[in-house]
Amino acid sequence: MPKAPNILPGEKLSDFSVRVDQALPVTGLAKKGKKVDGVRDHRITKHERRLRRMQEAWRKEDKRLKERMQEQRELAEEADGAERDLWDDRTEDVLAS
Image (cartoon, rainbow, N blue to C red; front, side):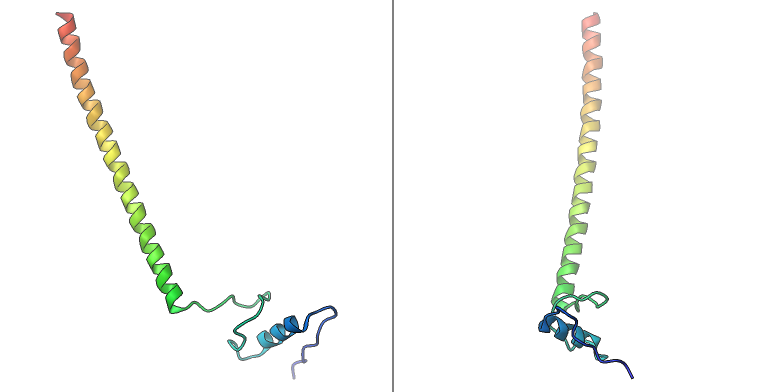
């Protein structure tokens, strides 16, 4: 038979109550209370799961947009470089004659 928990010296009654509730074999009875080591944080609600999925989708979309913008910048720089090279070559011909 498991030993019944006793209140520790200097422990508040509310803290003891939380510890007793979390020590019970039926989990989920203690809806409120402070975090105690070794006990799972909290259940994830449907709403929270939905919000997390939305945030993940936003992050993926943001990453995709940033990659596309970076690619467009690189293409624009290459085009500008090629155009500059063409102008540089033509001006050298004009100056040489």
